[in-house]
Image (cartoon, rainbow, N blue to C red; front, side, top):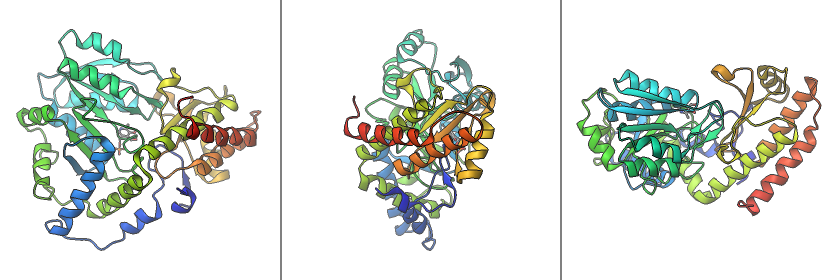
Length: 393
Ligand code: PLP
C-alpha cells in the first residue's frame, strides 16, 4: 500500500488518534445520506458488521454505537456491571483507570490492580488472583495508549475465561492493527473506536459481547437508555440500530474495512508490528529509552519513550509540529512533560514513520541534544524491512 498517496492531510498525524483518513474513506463519507430504516442501510450495516467481525475475530454480532471510544467502554460496563458485582480493574494508565472509574460510577465494587507506568499485568498473576473466586469481572486495556503498553490479550483472556470471570477489554487504540481473536481467546466484551487503526474520524465505537456477556447484560438492571446493548444487538437482526445512526461515518467504515481486508488482515497486522519495531529501534538509536518496562509488551500502534533528561517533552512535541508539520503526542497525567508518544497506526507506512523519526531527531538537535536524525531514519527503514522479511527474529 502506498500510504503517502492515500492521506493528504496538511498536518501529518502521528498521534495515537485521531489518525490520517485515507482519501477513499473521505470520498465514501461524501456520499449522499440514506434513510436508516431502509434496505440500503441494512446492507451497509451488515457489511460493516461482517468486516468488524473479521477484524475482531468473532462470529458474534457487533453493536455500532454513535459515540466515541469512551461511549463504547461505558456501554459495555453499564450493561455488564451493577451494584453487587465485583470488578478487578487493571490500572495500567489513563484508560485502564477510566474503565474502573466508570464501573464505580455504575455501582460496581472496584478493586484496583495498579501497575507502575510502563508496566503490564501478567496472566500468571491474574490466574492466582482470580483463583480466589472473589471477582465477577475483570477489565483491562489491550493497548494502553497512555504508556504504549500492549497486554497479552490471549493470556489474560483465557485465564479470565477459565476462571469463569467476565473479561471487559478496551481495544479502542488497537482494533484493526493486531489480532484480538475474541472467540478463540474467550473474551466477553471487546470495545473499539473509529479514529484509531480503523482510519476514520472520531464518532463511532464498536462493542461485541460473548454469549455469557449478553446473558449478563439481559440480567443487569438497565442502567442506560441510550447504551442498551441487548437492544442494539437485537436491532441488528432487522438491519437497524435503535436510534438514528451516524450513516456518514458508516459509509466511511465500510470503505476503511474494505481497504483493510483488501490489504489482508495478516499483512495489516504485520505492517503495524514492523512499524512499531522500526520506531523502537530508531528511538533507541537516538539514545531515547522506551517507557514500557518489558520489550515484549511494547505496543504495535503507539510507541512511548522518555524525553532526554532535562528536556520537557512538550517542547519537543511543539518543535516537531512547528518545524515539520507533524503531530506527535506528549505524556498524559503524571507522565506529562516526561514522555512523548508516536502513533503509527491505520493509514501509516514506513515513509511517514521515517519522516517522523527525522523530524524528532532534527527537533532534538535544535534543542541541543546530540543525535543523528538521518542515521535514525535509516535505522527505522532497515528495521522495517528486516521485520517484514522475518518477524520472528
Ligand atoms: N481507550 C483507549 C485505549 C484510548 O486510547 C482512548 C482514546 O485515546 C479511549 C479509550 C477513549 O476514546 P475516545 O476519546 O474516543 O472517547
